[in-house]
Length: 357
Image 1: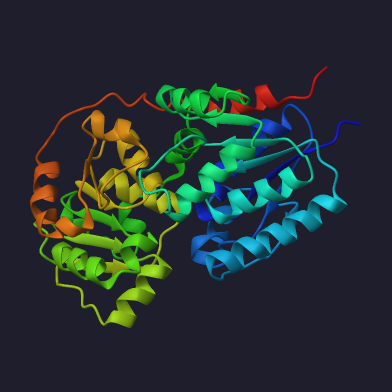
Image 2 (image 1 turned 180 degrees about the vertical axis):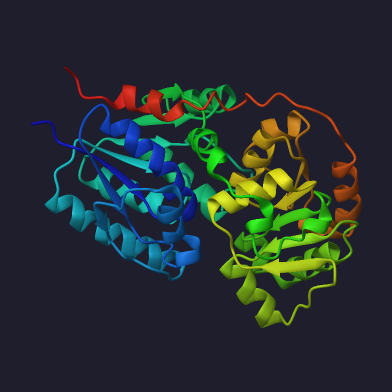
């Protein structure tokens, strides 16, 4: 009997992407889904199983929170123990989280071939947590699955020994399937039907922004001066920072709890502008035809900027956020939405990982 593939995930975006990867992999051979539990808050994690009808994981490692070192060590140890008890023919990891790197390292130490989905993205800040995770994972992976041609070219230069394939973005697969299930905006607490699409949907969560008061304060102040009402879905990290720093939200900012994936798609599609530091939301806005202002000095998804869907605004330039929102809202341009494939990335990945006849 063919040994299964282990599919590892542990955060909100990974649960969502794993839903389509698991189905595609299962069509070609046995697969075991392992949730590390890196995100354990219901609003950030379990809600996606419920909303998307995702099958429960075959194993749950329950690592929980902690510092980067503590969490990475906990995942590495738990994953190694699981792999010791469950022989697999390959390990699939997704993205650039602590789960991604720790599970890849655990598999590599046991000489299990690794497939990295969403490989090859690069940022100039080599010490950013996500950048460390993705570079380490790419260094030990056998299969490197790139979301676009530019990224595949980077990988072929960096890792000529690996199997590099341009497959598209699994997140696009998920969006195509999930969009028909998205609720009406009126069903989302905090949404005001009187806005009639003239509002900003905002999320902020990266440590480089949220954990630095000199950056977070001015960005929130700038959102409070937005020319359009702002619906801020506050990530738990952001909510804690706002309370700890005593940052007040202006009348234009309407804070809500983190929303599920389907609700986020709804708000993205309904908004005039998206403001975020999330790589996932940048692409969702791009695919849904909504202009985005990314509160970072760079993005790994450079095609969204080149095609006119996305504007970069470093937190240090927060005083320009209101004008950036106005410019984005009034732009009105259309852009090519095919930079990251056609929504069939998971099937391509599964075909490349299928067991030999």
